[in-house]
Length: 182
Image 1: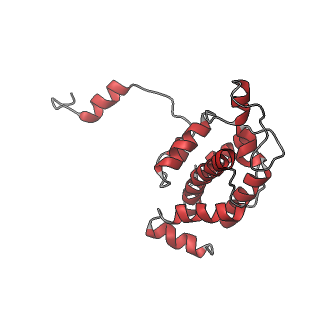
Image 2: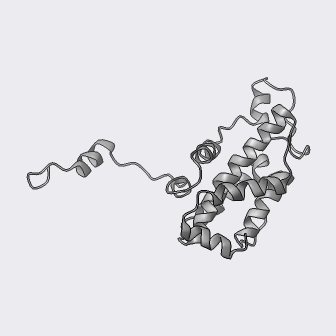
């Protein structure tokens, strides 16, 4: 009670306690991306997606070759941006948003995105959305390749990501995206 009045805010703060803020909150909270993509991104951040290297350790599969590039062993680091296929998709996203950098592994890319998301502005709001939708679309494409032997091209996947992002944008962000030349 404050000044003899009950305060929901104070009660909530007292009940929830004080917790350290997680660094990825800027990426998952207040992100206009689809709920499915935010969920998959959250699982990816915790490195809990069942990649082939994990399934191999559990003796569920017999090989861990990346289904999209057929070059490296599929792991979180590989499938998200070390893989030639996913690096192409992510490079298209970075180019669209006018970030001049080359994709690296998931952990380093995540650190960069988290650092970038600290800044405000439309470009960084779009980066949040594109990050979530890219991870989600790459994971869906990977699953489609593993289970159905069907893989979209990087360009097709990029267009799908663009569509998902564009369909959820506010007018302000939509105008900004159009200014970028989409």
